[in-house]
Every structure is written in structure tokens, then in C-alpha cells.
Length: 57
Image 1 (tube, rainbow, N blue to C red):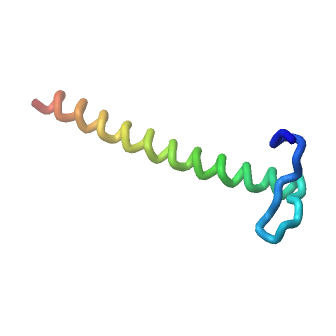
Image 2 (image 1 turned 90 degrees about the vertical axis):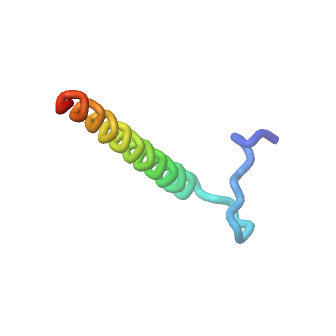
């Protein structure tokens, strides 16, 4: 059976409901987006410092 048609199993052996699956996916997506935002902000800060140092020198 494919992963899409087989019910997901939780730790207790009970199949996960669609709402629980969606909540878990949303939580994972939110964590990924938060990490990406932090990476982008850090990259922006380092680029800003390089530009400021170039203008000051």
C-alpha cells in the first residue's frame, strides 16, 4: 500500500486523524520558515556590515 492511502500510525498504534496530520505538518512548516527567516536575517545583517564598512573606508 502506498503512503498516501495507508493511515498514519501514532505511537499508540492508533491511526492519526487528518486534523492531527495537518497540525503536525503546519508545525513542521512553521519551524522551517522560522529557521529560514533567521538565516535570511543573519545574511542580511552580515551584508549590511560589509556595505557599511565599505562606505566608511
